[in-house]
Amino acid sequence: MEEYYFLFGLAFVWIVFAVVQDLRTKEISNWLNFSLIAFVLAYRAFYSVFVKDVMFFVYGFLGVLLFVVLAYSFYYGRIFAGGDAKLLMGLGGIFPYQNFYDYLYIGFGFIFLLFTVGAFYSLTYSLFLVSKKRKVFAREFKKEFIKIKNWFYFAIILAVVFGVFFRFNEFGIFSLSFLIIIILPFLYAYAKAVEVACMIKLISPGKLREGDWLEKNVKVGRKVIKKSVHGLAWQDIDVLRKAKKKVWIKDGVPFTPAFLFAFVLFIYIYLRYFV
Figure (cartoon, rainbow, N blue to C red):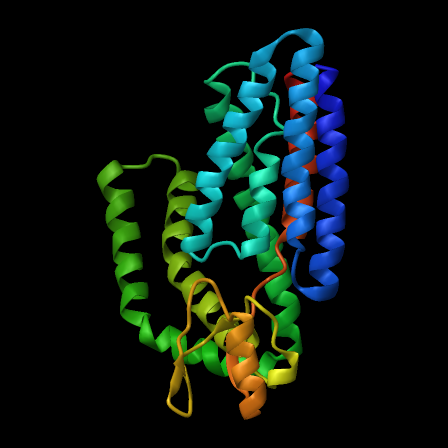
């Protein structure tokens, strides 16, 4: 087990640096993410040679490959930005896999923990944003709720039918199920209102960064800069700066703090209950 302490410490330091970069500049350098992958694989390779256990390297390498696949899926699904996805790739090699089942229990277990912690973190962060734009948010929330009010009524009917069909004898279970079902439309309206009121901003070309997500396509002369999952390229930013054209971009929540919280929680759970 001691061989993993170095990997845990390495990942913790790299995540802390990523958090600082993300909060200061809203981006994570490629050198930081790729150096984590390089250090993790180099350590596993040297340790494998030292103890003559090739599987220590193989398990780590396959862990990186697994998280590369997951990272690309989250990136193209617009769940993660590029920096977050690359950080996830590096973390795939630091977990203590002892067999192939551990990829399911440990690897996907961390992903579940990351999204759970991320949901609470994102909600807390969004409340901070809403507090600064209460009037705009209230107006947008009303608009979004009107759009989905029929789904709200449907959720109430579904909750009642769900409770009657399964004949819950315990009032607490029925109440919890009812609450979860009817709260979903509210969460959807809340998320959309936060996006419109707090996340979509008109930015001057001088403040644009590579990777910024356009809210909609932008026409500059005969050229059309299309919104893309990859965000703005430097060539696009150069065109916009020369045209002195402001654009609407969709900002995101700096997600690296969720990585830090989830990683610390994972280490605590693993060392407390599985070692």
